[in-house]
Image (cartoon, rainbow, N blue to C red):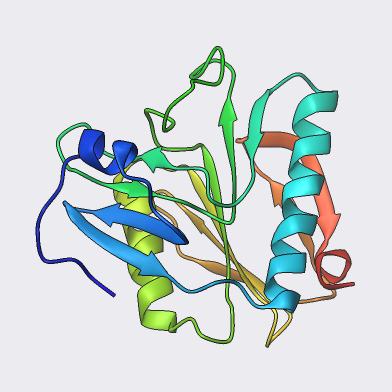
Length: 179
């Protein structure tokens, strides 16, 4: 469902909304709940990131439904399925939407997700300066890795996913994400 009245980030933050919502260029978008399989995979990816980020004192890992203000000049708040912001960019977690784009954003496809919508969101993340995006697809057991100014790379279950220059030293077998 899309609302027709444009709202600001401040208005959006103050609304007592039920369910999961994002704000895209002032338009409120209600999201469908996540399916069990994709929700479990998103939780696993978040746990892997949280454990690595904490153990290495790198910054903050955020679970689904955490709102990120992607642009300074657009009324847009998106919620990746998992995200990381490095401490050099965010000293402490605010009691509000995160006021910047994450360094790493993860999207996990659910059966109700359309690939075109996921790609639109990934494009927006990259435009906002997200350095690394992982698109996790439980149906094909693949992870597509997107980076600034690089061609996407598809990893299969036999491959290893790494954190590149965003999370140096982080790696996990793709198959483990889907186990």
